[in-house]
Image (cartoon, rainbow, N blue to C red; front, top):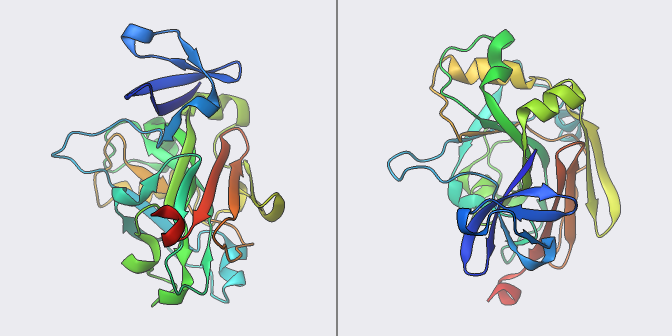
Length: 264
């Protein structure tokens, strides 16, 4: 099932995809359908209690071709960093390109949403702890990159720099229809032109390995995210560019680059 979280008619709603429309799950409107173009798309994640911030873990250089593209040796263990939830934004939203930036690029990534508390999970059991999958676009500002191996806050944690969605696809659907998350085609287009292609099977550290790795030293909670890295093929994005990051069986995430003047 494809699940969404949207704003419509002055309220926030959970919804599911139904024959090319959104079917609302809100009790008072349950079953009502609305068009994709009539809503504001939010990150497809349930809100968490205020006392428990969402952990967003992201991987650097998790595809060998991307490491080669950046002239780095493939890592021998996961190269992870933490992102703030404030960087997340929804499908069909806008991402700000700061003034004076020379190189800002997209990163099409499979995002894993944790479904239940995971602590010291074994690789063989790891997928049992996944609620679902979505598409993330983890923009990076290369100008201020201090160290390719450990991206700093100004590279990866700006507001609006991580579009996510449009759907949260149930883990069972991906596991049954695609045999799991490790054989999904990825693609990015910029203004309709294909600029990036890859497949999740080319990850250096696959999803079960990452869950085992992280849960060995930290507790993963329901709603936490793991962004699993991007293949090669990143290009600079300018204001006005429309970026579509797509993952087979998961969805097509649309995002537009804007400038401070346009967003004012």
